[in-house]
Amino acid sequence: MKKRVIGIVGPTASGKTALSLLVAQQLQGDIICMDSMQIYRDLNIGTAKPTASERAQAPHHMVDILPPDATYSVTQYAQDARKMIDAVAVPILVGGTGMYLQALSLPMDYGTVGGDEAIRETYHRLAEAQGVQAVHDRLRQVDPESANRLHPNDLRRVIRAIEVFELTGTPLSRQKMPGPEDAPYDFQLYALDLPRDVLYARVEKRIDQMMEEGLLQEVRMLKERGLSPDHQSMQGLGYKELLPVLNGEMALADTVSLLKLRTRHYAKRQLTWFRRDERITWLPWLPGDDLEPLAQTICEKYIKGETHESV
Image (cartoon, rainbow, N blue to C red):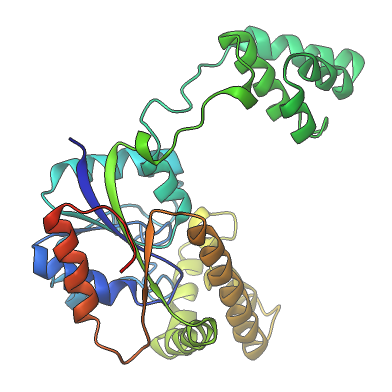
């Protein structure tokens, strides 16, 4: 029987933290961060990281696990988060990084078709001798569907598709993609469903609050420690926008307006991503409404062992 995992997902500023704390308290659960920026230490304000008082309300994991100059892959996250999921009694994933959820939803052995340096070398040499079109023509012979999807100039992926065929005998395009039934856990996923204009207003208000709390000073501190746009952590929203201000390249007011625009666009992309996931139950909610009944519903369904469905 698969372990049940609650997930509270959705776009930035949608109320995930508040809802997750209520659920964690009722179920005595552990919150496992699913945010690609909150994993970094010293990035606090711009990541909307749970505060010390919020973290005191329930155990939190996968927060502040890396120094800000570290790199971290989706695969590494999946490995580390799975260990934590397996270690706690009631795991509650909280965050808006869709790629992290996708990685956790895939079987552990998915994507493990090995590589073959000899095959890669053969096709790299063919590309050097006859051009990338010759390699693409070879892909078209064995996997026309992948050839139609991949541009000849995308040599790395073209060679990978040929490699998979030559190693397995099955075209990449015909290999079975895992579905929800193949996931290693029984996910019970929820997202707060706010009207779009309300969500965007919350996004803008949050950015104003971040600026008041000292986001610019936080970015200055990181810059003085040697962090630059080349570091993975500094590519997050708020950090990459404010670095040019500190370098005298942009005015602060213009940058704040740009940050609000980019964060709204990011929230929209998150919504698009999560709307595709049919496992997610969307909970209609307006700021100011009591979250307790929604938390109670999530807890009751978890206790009963129910799967996702309309609420």
